[in-house]
Structure formats: C-alpha cells, structure tokens
Amino acid sequence: MRSKFLTAILFFCSLHLSAQQNTLVGTWQYKSGDTLHSIKIITPTHWMLFSERIQENKNEFIRSAGGTYSINRNKYVENIHVATWKDYGKEKTNYTYKVTGDTFHQKGTLVLGEGTKVNIDEKWQRMKLPLKNNPAIGTWNQLSSKGVDANGKLLWSHTKATHIRYMTITPTHWMRINLDSNKVEALGGTYRIQGNKVNLNFELQPSHPPSDITQRVEGNKLYWSLILHTNNGDWMIEDVFEKVTPRTAKRVSTQ
Image (cartoon, rainbow, N blue to C red; front, side, top):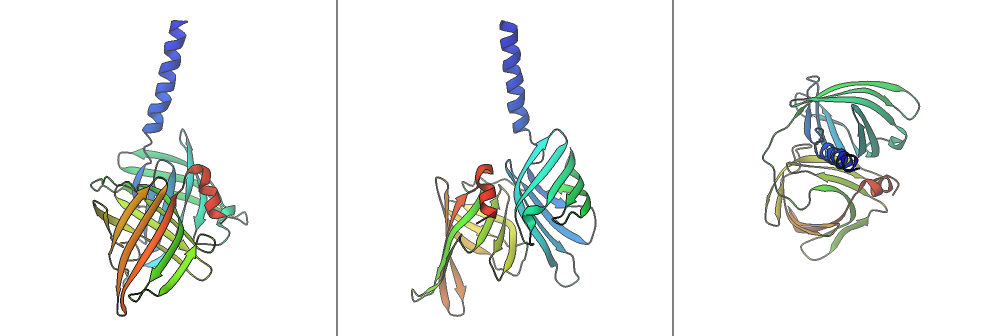
C-alpha cells in the first residue's frame, strides 16, 4: 500500500513539473524566410502573434491574432479568440511542435472558415532579453478608455461593448490588438519599468512615439494612465483592463 501511495505522489509531482516546464513559453521571432517579420508571444495560458511584410521603406502590416492554446505531448492547438480578420472564430488549427535549444518548429494545418486548408511549416527563434518583474504580466481585455484634453473636455469614451483591446504583457514584451467597427490596429514592442512607471517602445508599428504610463494593478484589474503631448496641448488618457483567463478568453471574442 505504501509503495502504491509513493508511486501516486511521484506521478502527480511529475505532472506538476511537466506543467512548469512548458518550453513554448517565451517570445519568438519568425526565422523561416526573409520576407516576413513576425513575433509570437506564448505565455503559460495564451498566445499572440504580430506579422508584417518586410518592405524597403516601411514594413506592411499583415495580421495579428491571439487566444488560448493546448498542448498534448507534441500536439499544439491554437484557439483563436481575437484577430484582425473577419470570421476568425471559425478557423481550426492542428499542429505538431518541437523545441530544440532556442528553436521552435511549428508544423501542421490551419483550416479556414470556408474549409480551405493552409499548410504551416514555421521555425521560430527565441528572443532573449533581461526579464522584468512586472505585476501586469498576463493577458488583458480592456474594459474602458477615455481621453480628456488640456481644458478637461472629454475627447472620447468607450467600453468593451463597442471596442476590443486585447493585450498580452510578458517579462520582456507587450502586444495589443485594437478592434472597432472602423479601425483595426495591432501594436507591440519591448518596455521598461521602474516602480509604477512603464515606458512602452512601439517596435511593431513604430510610427507611434514611446509612451510613459503610470500603472496600477488591483486584483484582476489593470489601470493605465498617460499624458499624450499634442500640438493642442497635453491629453490625459485613462484605460482600465480586466485579466483574461482561459475560462473567460472565449467571452472576449464575442463581446
């Protein structure tokens, strides 16, 4: 009986260790060609992708997407919960994966909403940067955003009912998809943090200037406030986010 008890303990300990040793977790740069610039972020619960076509003068944005995922041995399935193209909720993925050193090999099929199969065979290289201790690490869905000009006049105010802003923050990078009826935007890059001050570098879609943000995390809420310097004076922007879990992720895509 004691032997069976010890065997059970060792078995569950091995499951716990294997969950901790998810070699996919990290930030990856696409290495399968010289015409695409793609960054993929994988956290213990979510993934997010940004892709652009390399051009001589300015790279051309192609797509961005994110969601949850599951792994089973060498099987890797991405669940698409938000994306910058229409009908993204109908896609199905079926991949195998292998991590060798700093290389992540992803291979399989992406089945589009109309049933068309796209063969995927990609190699990604892990990006190595100093890790940051940031209480905002995780995946977030924006609840509300508002902007006020220098005279206190409300410039805009919206909620998740009309806008999707889906963001992932890791110890090295941040990435966000903005969706509303008239505009699709994807942003991302590295950041610096000191105390409650965060400086975002816009390395994906680099036309945006760096932003200095005051950050506060309370429970499952993330509060960002920043001052945007414009030709018409300083604007104050306040954003409120809610942490996304695998349980609530699907709800984000249907809001």
